Image (cartoon, rainbow, N blue to C red; front, top):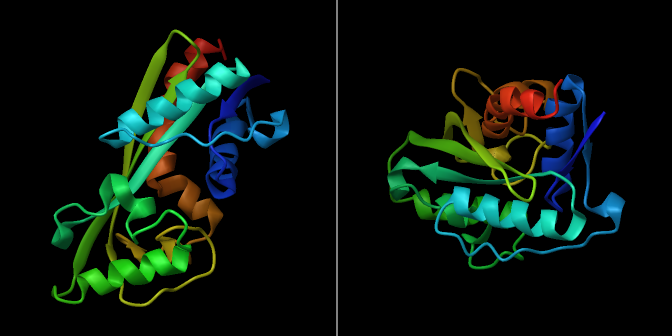
Length: 198
């Protein structure tokens, strides 16, 4: 199988990437499996810049073709916030997912429902020379109460467009077919198949 390092320490993201890409013949490996514990400062001005920084940093350490992603939630009522700052929106990157969700809901209290929102993801492939990327999205709205125990991040308060479920209620199979990360990675598939001659 064609080995690709998924350049993230987030076990939820890694699990999703494996579920989405491994059926196509790719061996998605984690940094931990290589003994790599790397934290990359996300100093980019947008998702693409942050994903590229991570892909380049992990490739430099592992010397294995990498895929990195950066994603965020954009809420219309908040003019696209939290966006690229989604992980740090609740004042600190050390906040729990529940605290981030509650902080977002507190910011939305002055605005009337529905709170239209979308997840965005940029997935970047890097092999030391070549960079390829794709953008994925998933539309929905923010609900005023966390529902579901699956997923991570803002999943419990994000209701999927066309479904009566939050992302955290949807289950892995549905999420991995329609999420922003799935959209980005599936768009990257034709390039990956060509690159690895699959």
